[in-house]
Length: 149
Image (cartoon, rainbow, N blue to C red; front, side, top):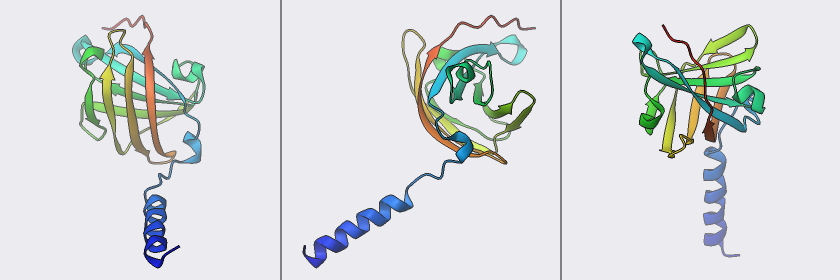
């Protein structure tokens, strides 16, 4: 192998190592997701995307799960949603039945919302104690009987 080729391959490997994500152990295997309607400000529309290691967690039934809330109807969810203080999007990590924490920073990018309200996208979110979650999702819409107001 030539010196030039070996140097080029080394740079590719170093670049790939530098770009790897440092997902926290708490978030390994968050492969399940769902999206559900929520109560928004002034009883308006909102949605929540749930991410979890189990389907029950993705339904918001059992912890642990991540919930990303955005105060828009599901058909208006496509786009980038910054997660920070005083923004339209907020995220929580529910580690058990009584413990949760609010995200410090991050984003949710929704690339598409299908005609059946299936939401496709990814998240990159930092929590103060639980750490970092970065994952793709394809969340099926689940009916939610939310009594607002």
